Image (cartoon, rainbow, N blue to C red; front, side, top):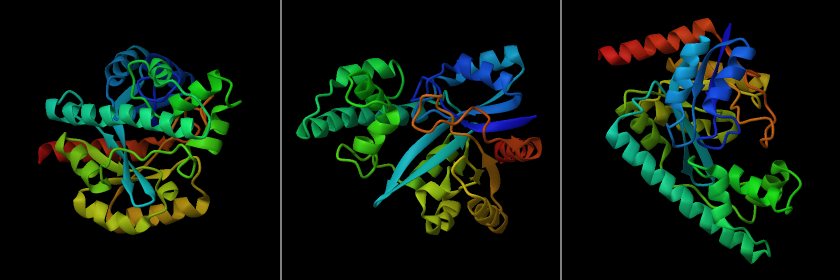
Length: 276
């Protein structure tokens, strides 16, 4: 049995509830999953509870979107102390900035003749962390686009006319934030960020792992990042980045998974961190 260590729920921009995600993990014969919602940890406890019922191990996690000039860098945090007060205060600030971002996206869309009601976006996101996928779904419901993919392609991608940058959290700051709450920071889908030159700086800041196995990583990418992991003594992780079947990336839960031995090393790294 295998593990998918990059999974989103309705508490951020996923389409399935934590309970539904765990049930699908069970159906996919996954032994372990990590809940890694964007800037929010509210989906962790219901997932863990359902995991205990269905015998699926759930690793508490989070995903941060950070920015460099013209680049996005995503940092995953595993085994975080998700109840820690100061950590949740930081998450609240980031989520508040996400709300502001939705209003700014609406303003940009208005300038090109498209009316978007931010309240509708927040209604779609519910109690979760609002993001571009929720904007895309609102545009879909309003008949502006025919698919979430089209919304990103025409308006919301980093080169789109309605793109608005994220909260200015640096990659190294995200790494240190994960460490501060007892977590293991991992560089998510590095080939997408396309800035391998920052890996030594991230390692110096405390980076512990790299997401080698990912849907859009080619065999060449996998080989390259396995090389980084070996050279810099980094943990090797992987996951589908599952959001749901209607998401812009149509990837099934467990489409990318890693074997038990890599998961075991992740758990061992957490034990070593706790002993320090």
